[in-house]
Every structure is written in C-alpha cells, then in structure tokens.
Image (cartoon, rainbow, N blue to C red):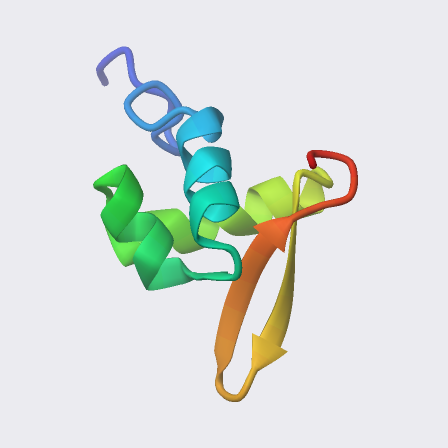
Length: 74
C-alpha cells in the first residue's frame, strides 16, 4: 500500500473539502467532488466524516443532502 491514508486524506486534505463547502454553500456532494477533484463517493465519505467531527453540517433538501460550514468552522 502507498503513503496515502486509506480515506484519501493525503491526496485530498480536509481543508480542500471545507473550502469547497464554504465557497459553494449550500453545496451538493457532487459540487464538492468536482471542486476537490475526487469521486462523488469519496466526497460523500469524507463529508460525512467531517460532519461527524463537527466541521460541516448537512440537511436534506428534497432528495439531496446539502452541506454547509458548521458554526464551529465558520
């Protein structure tokens, strides 16, 4: 296995996801993936992890989950 963390944190640092969410808020998972340059699946995994850590929040809008900075990271 290479030097990259199993969830891609070396290639795609948390700050890249946080910046994409801040710039596009509310941001869809696909928009974040395109901004970061990763797959939608990777973006979904990483955004959910960042939500669990309190760095971003999410809510359902229709059938889509949208992301925005948490109070803590604003």
